[in-house]
Length: 385
Image (cartoon, rainbow, N blue to C red; front, side, top):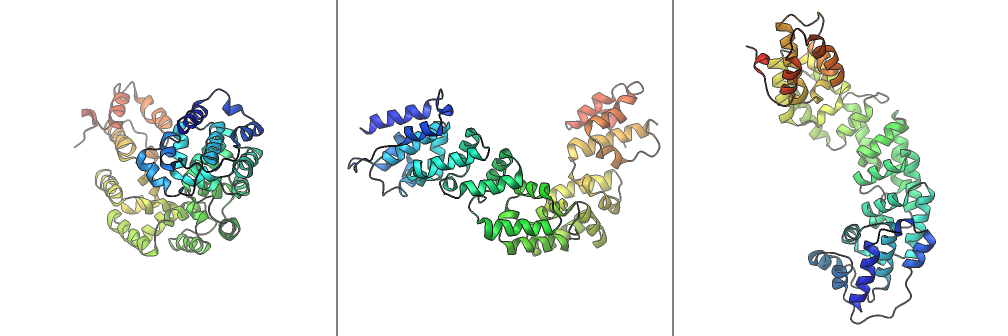
């Protein structure tokens, strides 16, 4: 009996011809299972392996949460429901391993209405399937639809909702009225607009899902490093301090002073202009500092006023463009007033148009040498004493 049931459900999971096009009514009728008396031969662990596709180790772990199951009726209905949504066998196995209790969810009273509600909000069935895969334990809760509705109002699209859900595992578990809405209101009071809040939700959901007290502490830390509310950098400042305690931030500031040879004033200027510098590693800052100060000859204060250059790739941009600058200077080809910062700040296409292409006649190999420098090679013409 178990083998026959396994074959039926496996067929449902592997079929791709019609299941994505099933209407909700057909899905529910397919998934609905008649009441079945307890089956004394039903073994949960074997069912998880043979029917759900779990490994024996994962099945053993999952079966501890399903010891109350005495019949495959409800799990069969759930598996048919997932197959109807378009989840593959591997996807289903991942969902069950992540949340074994999903197999106990009611299809007609819970899962089906959730699908109907989410598609009513504009999500496609494939997007609903992705949401199930990301947060199965939250999807089977009855508040998944109102929460998705609220997040969609902040984010603006179902694709962004899925991005946020992928990065914020607690997005659908936190209370909207007690946690999320007060945090959003606090962020708005700080001058963040709808797009900034949406970016926070996508890039660092914890800032919106943390306790309101923690969010207020983040706001205070962002102001404490010199970035005022209403500044265009305030969102970046929040993201930079969100993962650190006050003690860790103080240690990071001392590290910046030591590594980049900055004064207190230099640190304040740099953080106000580009607070993300707090998140960069000591090793990365050390290597870039040594190159910019010792090789290029920039003053620490000059870098502090232009900290964005520290975010640029050392091997892919800072070094190759320095070599081009020196080559053009050595050969009298660099226009007066051109400085290193202007050369590294522009995009690749603009850089080539301004500093490579105009000199192809005077320096026929400059494009080739620059391309080599961008992959870590230093041509002989780019070696200066």
